[in-house]
Length: 156
Image (tube, rainbow, N blue to C red; front, top):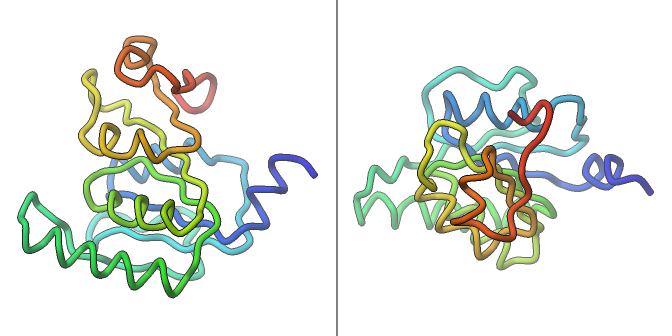
């Protein structure tokens, strides 16, 4: 079974913030079709180019303890309901709880570090220990994430 087919046939969660993170996720998965995909994000921004079957809007944490707790509870409900086998994320903060909870529930986690910052992102630093595959855009980020894979081609 090819790796592409492996990705296509599993319940897949895209976890992202709308805007640039969504654009990076679409670029990273260009050419891959997902038969059972759902998205987790917060309301606002443009919708994905290829809308998923289901989309969940969670509370944006905005670095507030109460909002982070609400986001965590919403993410737990989604993970228990959907049982994803694969999570692909580009961050940011809204995606962290669903990524960690899904990984703890047995899902594979692919994280694509943002090209928007030269420094390691906060979501990248939080998710690095949980990621099965961690992709960085520049060699400089390999210092912060030594087991990461350097992006090539359309990921850049």
